Image (cartoon, rainbow over all chains, first blue to last red; front, side):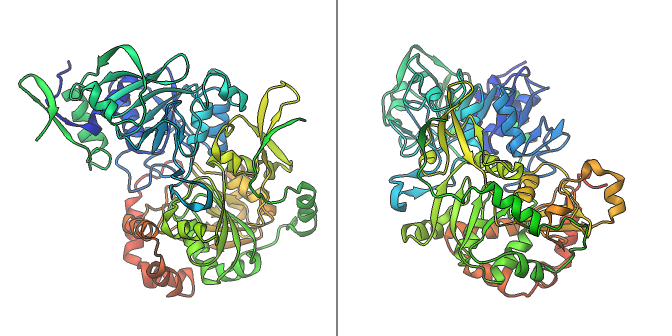
Length: 278
Length: 323
């Protein structure tokens, strides 16, 4: 039973896309809260009931009780409820080093052509000139060590740049072979980038490749919100909208207070077409 | 071993032999009572110019009452381990206590931005798990540990790490320098008067922090008997000989949470985050630090017993926490 929804917002759309990718048979490292955690929790209540994820504080396979108080997405009893194991940060990093982490799911400020992640500075680093942000946090370990990584960001020109001002966490660095040269384990790296408007993968030369778009935007609109032209898949697919069932769970069991989803534009189905609501 | 690339960041001198000698000469090998007030603990064990590590942060089972006491006593020139933290670094820098940060994740805020621009605060770049690995090396008594992350990042260039050719596999591998902080402050659920301490639930690197650091202050929600510690030794997270001072600090993590004991105070968290984002902690410091002489007085006069009771009630999950 699945009914395509007629009304949803951009944030709900992207969470549902990622939730559908998440599978029971893998172990995830979910960065922070926000869309990555919402997607994992939605998957746990829909397609992947036995989903296991870690967070930076070394929790293994919790059954988190949402919503959390502000910033309490780690080292809190609700976030870490009914886990399989409680560890520490070095333990989480050990598991990722060992190869247990199949996939990381991360939010990011800025991403470039090779999937490199910037969460440190926009503008010049030296001399403290640019606008500073918090730093890589745990994302560096996830991006370096998980077998593959899903990134979530907004479809905005300033978020997609040809080359990030600062590599906080590694994508494919300079291209094929570059990760290994810098000591990262082989066969790891970026896999997908999701925005509320589009889904990207990577071409054989490690460059970001547009693969699919949301039904409420055009390819031109997506490209207009990027600072560089990505590789293009031979055929650009159209992503499926959230179902009523997914939205019900998301709205009533996961993000009940709208902490994650209460921003972004609304989309409606009108005359058989999805478009931004007036 | 061939060095392929190295960061140019300054780092705390790596000196495992010095640390061993310190442990032999100064750590309390014998079981002695170390229960004291936070005022005495900070006065005796935190010095100007120290490299300071704190575990967890101001909002999550962190030593918030000890951070406030350090500010109250006006320590200067601290070099801070800025991993997994939101406001503590900004508080310490703005209060004039810290001027160097090993940065993995912090709430940066306009005050630190300004301090960096004016060269009043130096930043060295790391990531969270690279910093906890540095502490692990420090806690193992070895000069460095290898990691397979951090390579290729821009942060590496501003760190004390080195990319070398691994003598076993011949492939590039990252080395992180051991970190042996001068001082560490750690908040725990339970401790006995000697410093045998228990942390329940997940953590960042409390054990590594305690073992790697020269002087260690543990603040505890509850002081328990050594019999209680001996009843379930598998739950001892930190041994007494790593600890120099034990402070009884109920609600020591306020406005943060201590898992299983009390919830965070969302209004208190937002007040601190707001001040950090505005780049102005003056009002915050006045109200939460300088207006009182101790943590007890703070709880009584600023937070209030009604609020504390509410935070205990709001923490409804108990399984796994406590004895």
